[in-house]
Image 1 (cartoon, rainbow, N blue to C red):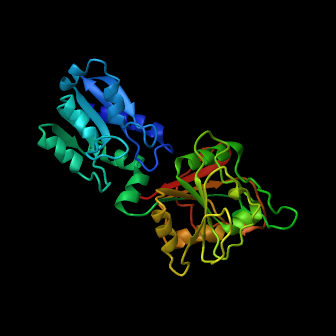
Image 2: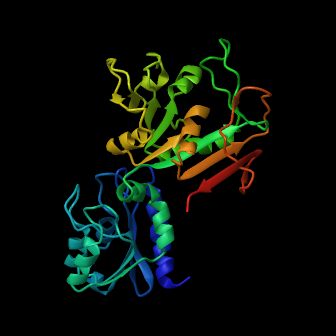
Image 3: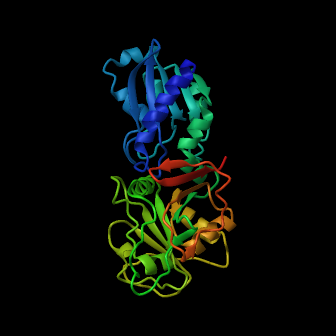
Length: 344
């Protein structure tokens, strides 16, 4: 690995520390190098907080040495006023001449402007270092800003004989049957902290009454989105409590006090994706029942699919979505097989 790649990888290692905490901002890490040695590091820790470049620069007491340093950052420095002042101005203020950037920022407020501004002011700028890796860690931010849609992850657990849930009756209504093991469940909740929202259909709420929080893992709870065309959601549902924000997508004209209802045209298959985007939500993890998951699969609305294949047998119940996992590799999470697919 060459030096630029080495230092950029360190930026990525720092950036990922902010996952789930920076929405709607991207994940950004920065290192400052002097004489082929890292002398300062920073990363963006939360929305509204200081940017990675500022964090790294602020940690250096003797600012006069910065003119002899190189600054590495995985995403193009901003050149506009937002919650914080432009990072480009701070870089120029201290005379940092060499800036190495992972990728350009797809946000319309930046999108190459930061790079050009630095070049016009005499900086030596290099772009597209570890480009694929930089794109991957900010895939949610890029999907939202470049493709104008949320990044979509589909996730489910299935039994050894191909069911995602048991037959529901009065005895088990409102109860969740865990197919996956405890370690897999913790991992699932970790994933929830990394996405801005979680989506299920109303039948899942009626059958299981889930909280849809990340209670098994320390982190932010996702925004809860419930697909409910006829507004059948029970008013005592746990998702309507204040653990996190909840949104109900419905085509019903009814209004219910305390419930955030967004009108959705279910005759337009794109409307769910468009409404999530309009809400400013960059990513969603879909954990619904078969009908909801199949809708996303059939319409090719996914960027990542995660499936736990377990050793439990149900013999009957709700069939898994129609998606062939046998052609893919998997890794073991104790006795569960985890299939994890990412779109290229």
